[in-house]
Amino acid sequence: MGGRPVGLVANQPQSVAGTLDIAASQKGGRFVAFCDAFNLPLVTFVDTSGFYPGKDLEWRGMIRYGAQMAFAYARATVPRVCVTLRKSYGGAYIVMDSRYMGNDLMLAWPSAEIAVMGAKGAVEILHRDADEDERAGLVAAYEERLLNPYIAAERGSVDRVIEPAETRSELAAALDVLAGKRERLPRRRHDNSPL
Image 1 (cartoon, rainbow, N blue to C red):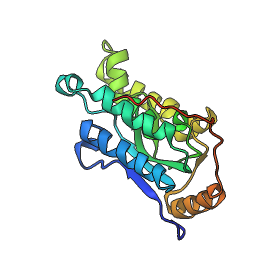
Image 2: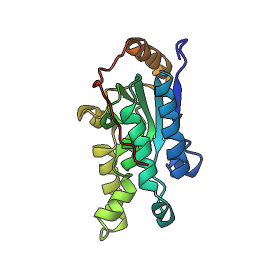
Image 3: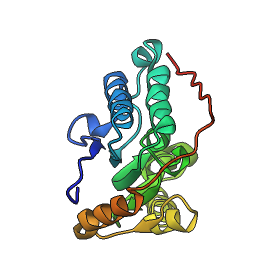
Image 4: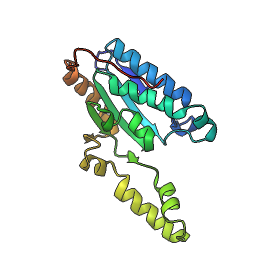
């Protein structure tokens, strides 16, 4: 990116809607730790509808593996830039290097939807008794009021909303600015990884 090697982390929305499962969380966490170990800046592209649901995954430790990915991002000291492309829902939004994980720059496309869940699911839970026409209006209101990336920018969850065509130049400029990033760490730093 701009002549610099970087590590890219991204969701694949054409495979299980880009959800994070155990394998994806392990792979992502190990890759983030690898990039941090070799001082490679991280660029994260987010398009996820959340963690993959299911009792089987929960029994196999999905929360632990998701925590490992969050831990890897939180501990990384390299420059970190995140771009939300489309969906960014729930706990997976936070784990995928959101503002709350301490990234250096958070960008979003105008098509980005950043929320706890999608509009349709939220309306189905919050307004079960509403009829079909009422639900359609509530979905539209939810999308306008809560899924808009400009609202996320107002609330501090996004630094800037950019056009897709500007993505490469914005990332290159951000990585230039962050090239000299050095975090001051305590003399003895002990991590307690969620194993």
